[in-house]
Image (cartoon, rainbow, N blue to C red; front, side, top):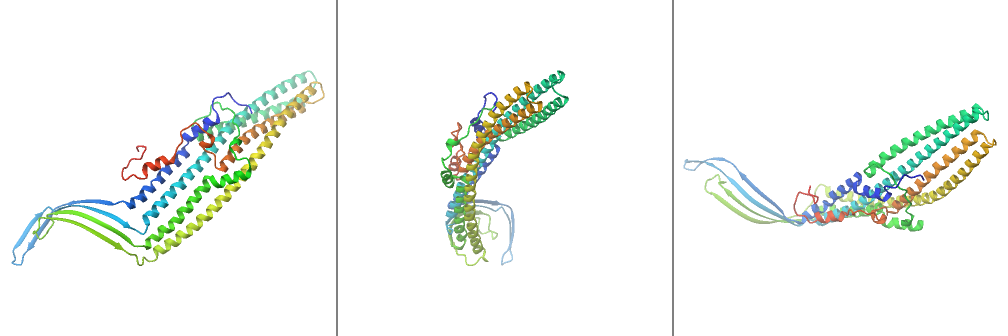
Length: 442
């Protein structure tokens, strides 16, 4: 493949993608939001404190039994503090915490899966720029050669060696070559914009990339086993099953007793309309037990619904496993096919170069016509196009297979960039009892 001078390699592009890609950063923000489900669930274990304060004016006019009248304008105010602690709620809090933690784990796998897709998009964008640049250079070379053939044909026409038909054929091929060159230029411009969208900046000079076969399991069976055990889509669907299963117990908690204790202290000043008490101080501790008897069938329906969702999630898990298996087999076959296609394209280019050189020598000796030379040149250009396309497909197919196995990540690729670990934010907020700012200071 024709490549520009070295400046940036595929690993550098993947590092930039990992650090700046909007889709990936948006997914990280979503996961940080999912982390907050855990402290929200844990809040069910903690006491609830409510402070209250009220004040106002109250006009009072009391008529006593002896018909005397008492009247006053009071300025009542009340201050109080109430503490409520749930002691038992049918294991609702415990199951809420378990659901939230499974959601976090599922979200992490979704983040890994999005990361794989973004990396594959980056590889595709990188290789498309490389290929389209090489195709542009191939078409530009083709136009130069066709113009040389056209000039030679005109000289031979002036010398009486060829007919006007030969010059018309040469001119036609030049026009076709210019059209192909324009199409290649357009494709290159589009691929550069896609590169900037995915990777975060416009491409400069890119260096050739290599397949990653060394990172792929050696056999198709090993690839299938690896995908079944570590592909993020499979693992995420497994955690979704855990969420659904725990949600059944969460729905059943509405059928169990609720136990809580509440303590309160308060002070009331000028709050007695009989005008006999100036101030009242109160303190109380109250325990409460509630046992649901019948709620119109709501809890029963929610429990049945949760069971159906659980059945659905198990079927989805099986579907994801089948899809992953199909993706691995397809990617494996495609990767093997690109190896054959690349070897064939390389052989075709070599043969087409030899054929073109021979036809041009024979044409110079009068044994071949102009159209033979033009056809041989077109065959070489087509062969080079197929070779460039095969080189691009070879690299993309290997990364596609790595993604299908579930290993397209910075650790497997050994990229030189700090790892974004979702664990860090999770532990920062998991046991937070208060605070409105995020760990990033927002």
